[in-house]
Amino acid sequence: MALQKKDICTDELVDSGLGSSFPEDIRDGVENLKINDESLTNSQHNGDNADQGTYGYTLKKDKEGDSSLHLSIAIGNEDLALKLISLLSQESVNAQNDIGQTPLHIAVIINMPSVIRRLIDIGADLGICDSFGNNIVHLAAEYGNDRAVIEIFTHSIHRDMRELSKICHYLLESRNFQGFTPFHVAIREKKFDTALLLRHVGADVNAMDGKAGYSSLHHLVERGNLAHIQLFIEKFKPVIDAQSFSGLTPLHLTMEEGSADVAAILILNGADPEKECMDGLSWYSVMYPCQ
Figure 1 (cartoon, one colour):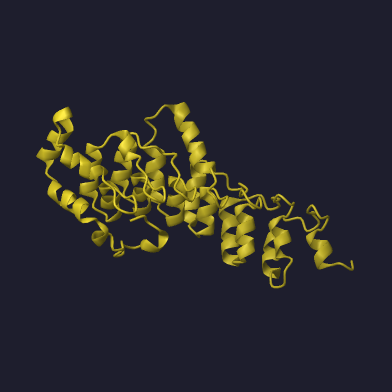
Figure 2 (cartoon, rainbow, N blue to C red; figure 1 turned 60 degrees about the horizontal axis):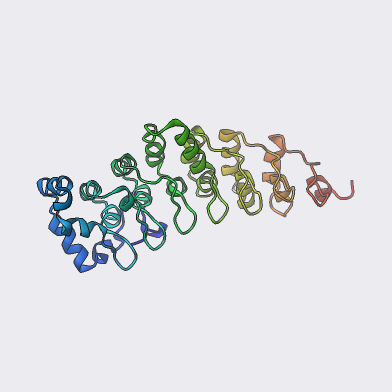
């Protein structure tokens, strides 16, 4: 089953119906593994003589493109997932389901540190995106899975440092199909602790989205939650007058009725009421047109 946010509870795994979604032949194959260390070890080391039936079950997919490995992670069966990983090649570990999720994507969503570590160890591709353009850090940000973020950025240090630098930059700065970086996603989902962690590992708190050129502060101001705006300014010290593609600052977005408190907070923190957008309008000229 391809995992969506509605399938996940922040406190515990909900019954998403995954158990019943195993096709009968895949379910039987998984059950037949019996988590038997001796048989799995033999399968790993016997080369061409390995149990091809056991190996085949780890690769076979259901109607949604999920392999036994995808499903074992999705139902939270850590022991089985680790056993299945030990059987697979690097190419197989990167297999994607029908919405582009690899086993690593699902391990990040479910927040399974040991599985994340093992997948990274055997060379899982950190840069694969799902069908919505989300990489693994986008997903960790969306679900507020701080431990997953830590595993991704600390357990990859054994890789070549030049390669690691490129991967980290890509993971933090790439934009999904909505135009958002992982930092944007964390802020929009109100996962402020995760956002702090992303900043610590190098995320740009002033990054512009790929559609309007809005920063995270623009997005918070647009939503109008005064407490969140105050918290963001205090904790992240963003550029108050960051301009979008059309030259709009966060203060420009408060020119609608009911945004006076937000405007006051921005001005108190250094926003320039006379800064003009591309249309030549400033907050001051709109709010006080006769002066």
